[in-house]
Length: 252
Image (cartoon, rainbow, N blue to C red):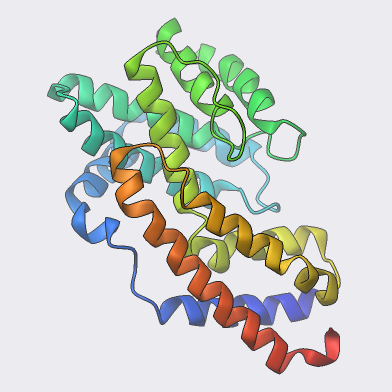
């Protein structure tokens, strides 16, 4: 099945390229560039990125590329939401770096059951070697523990810590849009390699999950832009579904 999924991945990417990018990146290009610059320039973020690159499996749909996209989008959301909350320049930069730490580390335990809890414990150990305060490390770990969909939120006592968690969650769920069909889905099926018939049997459930995610965004910016990410994913997913039925019927 690997060769079939490789072909489908390329066809899915062609479908994705026929759609416009989400409006978030155009409307908030300055916030995105701010986060990107910090990601590239900050020495501790670069150090943490190298660590994640060396220790995160890339074969289950949530590898380094996924982590970096979540990290930069989470930083952009923090820039937007932090400014709205009245953060000064120094605080805004620091909280953006904190949420980027959470973005890089959030899926390090992705293959474990209850991966968010295990990931939070792992992050706490990793970040002991970085120049973060105890409270900053706790904000990262609570955000990681709270980033899964369809689970009860864990209690977060401070508004600053809650914003870290909300920005991480929304940036992670942005990936359920077009990115799901360019990379995530195919990395997962490459790892699992199910028969195409089984893949298609689970397809409606996956599309239903995309629909459900639309109502779960947490930040004001996420609630404004997140549903469009998912609507794009749903439209792409439907085109891919129809293509599989028409061109791969012999494997179903």
